[in-house]
Length: 142
Image (cartoon, rainbow, N blue to C red):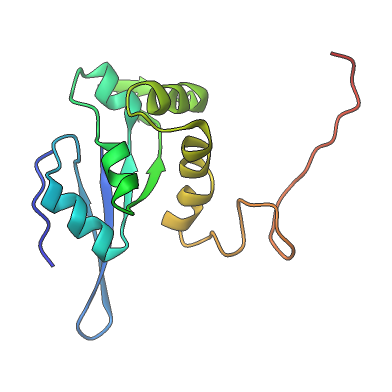
């Protein structure tokens, strides 16, 4: 499979003949319509970095177009010297404001879709029977 891309990040896992996995990371700020269609067809997760695009003044990834095309979108922060941000609330904010994602879409992208990227969504990151997780219930005044 070939994907036509120019510059957030996509993590592709392709299963080659003989069952060999290939992990590929590409930038997605300037992804084309054909690239989005190829990502959707491949059922690959587009891992977007909204803070990186904002801090480096790059074009924002086309998250809305990707979601409408059926691409699985995940969000992450960037902890690099060139784009330093570890705040997940800021990541969600920028995804909603700059990339036109809804709050539920950004929350899913941040949690369950991130687990999907790691191959853990079957057992983590959603409140379901037989899934791992921690729950804290507080009884506190406002």
